[in-house]
Amino acid sequence: MSDRAGEATTLNNIGLVYRAIGQPQQALTYYQQALTISREVRDRAGEAATLNNIGAVYSDIGQPQEAIENLEKSVQITLEMRAGLQQENRQTFLESNRGRSVALVDLLIDQNQPDQAFKWYNLATTFDLADYTRLIDAQVGDPEAQKLIDQWNQNHQRLQLLYAQVDQDWTPQLSQQINQLQAENSQLAEDISRQYTQVAELFETTPQDIQTLRANIAPGTLVIQPVLLTNIRNLQDKIGIFLVSRDQATLVRTIPINPTEFDAILTEYRAQLQNPNSDNYAGNQELLYDYLIRPVEADIAAYSPEQIAIIATGKLRYIPFETLYDNQSEQYLLEKYPIHYLTRISATRNIPNNPRLSTNVLAFGNPTPTSRELPGAEQEARQVTEILSGEYWLREQATRHRFYNDSARFNILHLATHGCFQRQGCPGLNLEANNILFANGETFNIADAALLGLNQTNLVVLSACETAMEAESDGREFAAIAYLFERAGADAVIASLWNAEDNKTLLIMTQFYENVNQGMTKVEALRQAKLTFAQQAIHPFYWSPLILIGDGSSF
Image 1 (tube, helix red, strand yellow):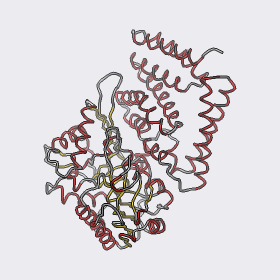
Image 2 (image 1 turned 180 degrees about the vertical axis):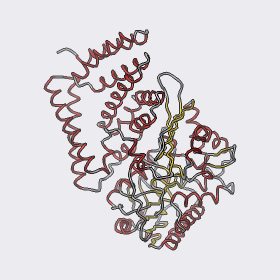
Image 3 (image 1 turned 30 degrees about the vertical axis):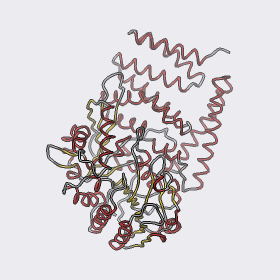
């Protein structure tokens, strides 16, 4: 039998040569031949690569619409393939093919199509939280949905075995078998996504309509998403900054950047923030403001937003944007606007504006025994319930059993206890990754959040988390804290980027609840609680780690 897949690869390589020597039409001829064969033998990887090459040629010869059409097809196939890989292979696969989505986004920006650029960027990059959900085997609350997901996984495993046979012994019958099973599983994924919207993100095949996001943005909120666009068609690396609001057209601004230098700034700044003895953080605060806010400063002012929502990806998830400093106005960004953060779920879900008839809190403080006690957390749990009413449990009474059994009865869950969200675990606390500590050494794995029944939960507070930025970190382990609780039904999460000083956390959380009790929105209440310290020139280690992710409105 002839090696048809190999023949397609050879034709594709010939096309690359013709493009390199400036003969685009010859390149297109060979690419089209390669594309036909790749589709015939169901070589999805080859098809995606060839479509990408065709798009690049059309971009070279000044036919942007044809380039966009082919690049979109290439990226869509790439994402469908990625969705079907085992988790440990997914990130490597996407990184090796990242240039396709970056080239598409950059071309869409050049063609003044910011909505499409925003959509495709998020489709290509924000599924790392779904990756994380799969990695920790996060549970689904509905048992019927879980059964269908298990069926999809079984079909998927069969497909992987069949695809493995293509390279060894392709036949028309094998291709037909793959096509049929792929169609069945795609339909199953579509059915699950439609019937159980809370798990739709696990299948990753449908571009999110930006109109869905825009319709769910709260009035008066401006969404800002900075994106790193590197290795763009061999041109200069850039940061693109998207601005999206409910009622106005999407804007995007781009600025040149050295990605290595930018990464070094982020890494150094995070280390400075979580070290209360560092005294040289001001330079990086100003640099990051100039990179991420200054280019869109006038645009933000034109929107006159009541609050700003940040969609952060990669290492930007480790940085509280509140601390970015404008050296011209001599103000933190926090002093200018209330700020909260969005995950993929909170960016696209519609939370009804139905204020609770009453607000009650279930609080846990300083479960014991532990190697590192949090005495301020005990007072924190007491004061929370004094301000808003509810129940609190301390030390050996702060049990996982109470948390499991009682969570659904309260609309605020306040956990003033250690949580470990470092990829390698927290040996100093004797905690594995993704776990929250309760009394007597018992833990709660956030993979089980969907089993708690949090559909009436307005806020989950985790005031003593531990995360860490490492060389290859991308922040997904922190973002997933909110993501999984939101997926379980909670409207919003307050979590700590690092475990700050116990007494300052107590003061900030107490003031937050006092502000909420006075009628402030969640985002404004947290802002005012932080400003008390920020305006006194206190090191941001103490006041900036607690951030609000999700819905920022009133209770």
